[in-house]
Length: 254
Image (cartoon, rainbow, N blue to C red):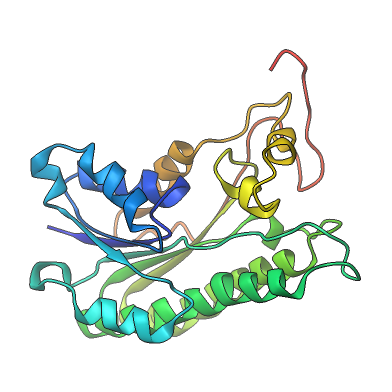
């Protein structure tokens, strides 16, 4: 039985991906800060499938917590075949001269340092076994800058660069390294970005049909299920109504 570790698994992409792979018969290690949210979705699964899901309350910004969580895994969950570095967020959307430095720290610590801590802890096992697949969740914001994106753009451009370099470091060891970059997806992303302002968050997806978390899980499933000699290295996935980071066709019938 294969094992997948998904960070940021309390909601959105992480939740959808964890459920998808548990239903496919995989062992799933789900990490997030909100253990109650993870318990809620695990409890909705059948009893048999629930036993394939191991939940851990982990803040990826804490390198020691990451190491301790891996050390605490049951024996049958220790050989991780796939790592999905999904934990990440946007905090604030302000011009550079007005933005909150607390928001900057939060994004850098989660989107970059958290990804690095988890990868550094998990990848040596993959190197030893000469197999594995690491998928980093990037963003269209790591392909194109946009006004008021500044530090979020910088972290996701960083994820893009890290993914490329990680692939070079790990290719001699039989490890695939990939990146999935979504455009507009209707999850908690905008609520977090706008610090809980539901009206602002709702306006982001007004009069258009965004992607769903399940669309991202579908794409991850496709990438992971590719034959071993195939690495789908970099995917940009957009809703049909989105042409770029800043161009979106809005139709009042939606």
